[in-house]
Image 1 (cartoon, rainbow, N blue to C red):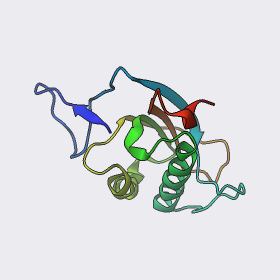
Image 2: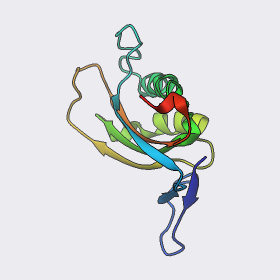
Image 3: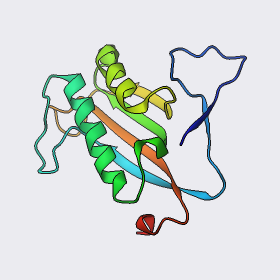
Image 4: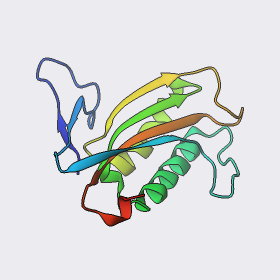
Length: 138
């Protein structure tokens, strides 16, 4: 479970924003490479639709980290790469659906292009997992 720490000296830009996340000492960090809006069969979904692509990534993230005994509550940091940052209004509702009221610490940057021209968003993640969970010993 994420515990957010926000400075009283810094304006939190949106509800759910986390400046810092506290990670208990009995956990270890797992770093996940960038996920895009591909099905597990490799098909890119939601071409031209940022909300659909973000939803697919969140479903992929949830599924992948479950294999190490983690859930979305264990995600402590995300890095978002988008081809059009003005599409934030389509990303935010998906994040609210999955992250709830305490989001992982995050950065979002606009880039000119992702690996495939039809990809609009890529998300990397850092996950905090219990050191005693045998499922995460890969």
